[in-house]
Image 1: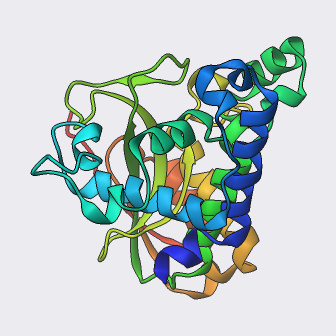
Image 2: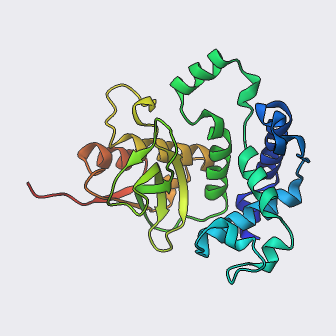
Length: 256
């Protein structure tokens, strides 16, 4: 029920329509698997996402073990409803936008402006749902979150100290008591569009607070909320901004 609120019907249908569209219109349609493709529906997409969530919690040696009835890691509730080849086909075609509707030159221009333009509409709607269905408590914090990724992308980060040393990075506004992610957006590296003379350490705070205020009709000014940051984000500018928006502010500092 909770997952249904966050991944609502509009988001599921966005995935269903764009995934089917990709399989029918892209170069994938000319491959062997593409010729065998059948359109997915809302129920199958929810099942696919359920398997993805399950794989993120239950660790197995490899993906094939979950779909193998003869393996001790085989999960009957998975392989009885979806084959491994179907799961791989959905993973290959999964999209939330239609980049094939643009020419190569248009796609290149869009990639330069925003490396995440193909997923931005989906992620913004998802972040709005995160904020809509949660009453933010008094104490919250701003921090980074990583999403493991080893492919080729201009915004991929490397940090050996993180659980996934190759990753995408998100800036997240979290509930300090529960760890719930209240709002987020992707780090875009040098392609980040922030106002002139706005410090890189200040922009995540400004961007997320302004987004939430626009969604909640400035509810933060009357909530007696406290924002906490670590020493990377902490600054006098951050304190002044929070004060101007009605947020209390506390940050750690590092001795020099």
